[in-house]
Image (cartoon, rainbow over all chains, first blue to last red; front, top):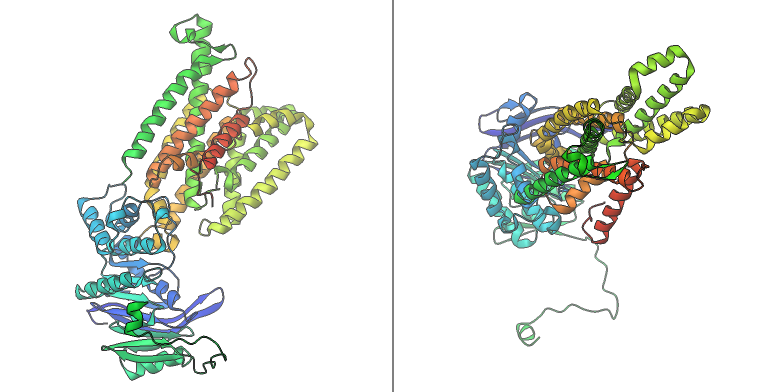
Length: 280
Length: 332
């Protein structure tokens, strides 16, 4: 265990309702690093994230900032490790601001009103995810993407050293996905360790480290641009990925190895020429 | 962020409660009269101070307890249809009263023992015993669904036992009916001195856990990740729920609808955190039951309507009106 490790886990087994969901996983998340976890449906990605957050009991040794996770006092742990779950919002009654302020809960003394620092942290987080303008609107009146930005701000408002996110890009449109990428990189630059489960492979391929999971096991962990990583991705996704490089970034496209021939007489998609685009 | 709006509602509800209290002491079996408030003879003074004041204060406090318990239940179980009787408290209180009434008529010895316990004691013991039974069946407070299911089972089984006792002993049918419909007619200063401290204690515990309830709206996993000690929060809130419901039911019988409707009425007026919601639900419940008590005394004076029937009619009609206007859209 080196000192710059934000988190490390040696997980032997995690069982849910008599089924073994995870086994034999060794993972180390350095500080100032963004690690993405990918894998097919049912690979155990979200379960792993929950186990790392201490939300599920597992036969494991998990260390957070050099101390065993179970030894942390809950509020101190909540200040060090922030969690953004999947589909967590049902807080329709609360305003966006009040939801983000919940992120400051571990910093507040029991019954004490939010401090000036709490309000500053909430404002910072809401500006970062661009949801400040509708801070007074109840969550019920926000769209899926707007809601997700509020929830992301809630996780950012904790200002923790380790940030775990499960499907943070759900409902976000491409510009806000790009914003998210910028936020995550900035956090990593500031020394925060970010671990995110992602379904968007193209985003995950831009992470510092990529963890590929399959069948409850960690198949590969390393930088995303290596042949070993690509091999693990192909194995996990049934050899049905087309990995290509564009402007120095790796892209993973769904690839059907046996495409159907186009139906006879069916419509053909022709490339649009510049002149066609202009006249429309 | 909505701080001013809930504050306005708070002031409005306090004013409404004061106005209803004045009205409550002016209305009796002789109809509406303000003369008693300005003086009157010794008998009138006694009616005023020993009957109408404690009855109005007791009705307000019982309603406030039910409103608070309703908001706690809906927040804790994250279900807008949850009510204070969810964990079997009403069925337990009903059975407690039925058993006591049967014992009263059984033999002089059991009657003497029953008199000592009293109807309120039996109802309270029954309510608390039922909640404890629910907690035992649910193996603690960890699993919300298990708790809800255990509450339903306890409610059905104890309700059946009460029905069986009532059928076997037809003499108890009338007093049982009065209890089941709820009545504020027996509220005395003694009731008020029980209800008010219980209300204060329950309100303090609930407000202490209000931020945890806010965090729970984001799901249990998120609440835990924010450092909320869920077992402690659940235990203290369930104790609050049981105590508030048990105390209210013991003093005023099974008042329907107040606990369910009070939080919805608050939500229809303002979006707020649980801190405000709990406080405002208690005040709304108090005002609602006090208004129902006044209506029960006034509408067919010198006779009285069962207050539980009035709460159902008042609360139900108002909720329907709000739904018609589209202000209560969150009954999901």
